[in-house]
Image (cartoon, rainbow, N blue to C red):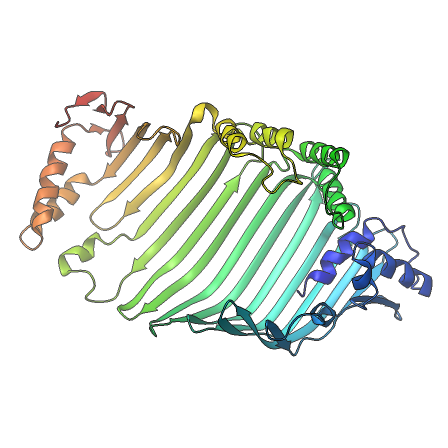
Length: 482
């Protein structure tokens, strides 16, 4: 809710004639009219947004309590909510200076069905400063900081308490071409802690020394996106969209494809700990990543997880297994050859936005077949690996599935292992304590017979399983038991 004034800034300033750098009553009236022009008439006159000229800035007040006047307190109630003040100032170059500082301390309750939930949100101090570019409908640069972030949620089913000691976020955007922009966002949060207690009073405590997030969105086609946003705002009060309006919106959507060139996001957690009734699990670092190359044909969407130095409570793992616990685990994969542009095009060709379901069931199935060329969904294993003191294995390759044809699939992967003899020796030495290790050592000795030795000493197996189920390892067919 705190960022709503910044979002309203987009709708007001993108169409606002350039004002003189002086702060005037006329300028304040123009801004307030723009801020409220897309709101329902009743809400526009309610005092939700007010603008008045200050000494050096326009003072924009956003009063969220207005939104709650007609809400049944038995369904939702909140206390401590107060208006937010933002300062905006036109600059000589057509950009706008934006700043906002406040705190937050609210408590409330809402009812869903027969269950009541109590909640609270608190931020000791919040501040945001930025330079807004009305031409790209976004901040050219901005910095946001917050201290003492705390929230609670309590219901009969579950209670949650979460806390961040600090947060700092930086936004930077720049023009990549005449029609696209690149956006970069970094956020760092310190000293995270969360406690979850379920209805059976089972308690889980999560904590981390820090959480950081890095997002890059490159080649964003901002003008078609602006057109789409304002089309929605212009028609938000319409119950039904006329055919010609639907056609206009669909063309705007088409003009926005592939929307962006690349999306890269990573989230890093340091010194993660998860305390359970069994004990405390953890990892020195956890990294989660996603990536995409736009809404186009032949598109790719990837994700990944990396765990460094995972740990388990004493006694959970038998002594013989301790050396087998990985020091690093990596899983990075992607879905390939997605025909997103053609699939979206089919949706736009056939969708009726006034219908309860924009597409019929038959049309939805047809769209799915277009999204997956030939009905195939291909997952590429870019880096799947695990390392410990007794093994170092990794694999890459692809698996292709056919969602509409049960059982049809094929796989082509390459597996690498370093110090393979050390792994076999470890299993053999602990076979008396863990009988399954003896069986595993026997299987690995058999598998070693199919291996090829790389120039760096690693063992390599190329494993291919075709649609008939036939398996080959490094070109040698493996007889499968019937």
